[in-house]
Amino acid sequence: MPTYDYVCPENGREVSVFHAMSARITTWGELCDMASVDVGKTDREAPVERLLGTGHVLAPRSGKNLGIGGGGCCSGQGCNC
Image (cartoon, rainbow, N blue to C red):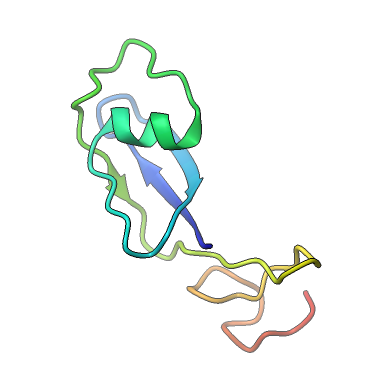
């Protein structure tokens, strides 16, 4: 499952979460629930934005970044970074 990075413009915090490509996270509350992060003083309904260039996939068992989805060292070539 890929990792996605989100930012909340209201509080400036960035949070990374694992979720299916089909999942859509639109609010701070949804993001915090999925990432097991405390909502803090930010309104649960505050919008969040998924950052571009995210969606890293880890190789099974090895934990190595395959570079799939941008941001990896191999640009999708599947090297052993």
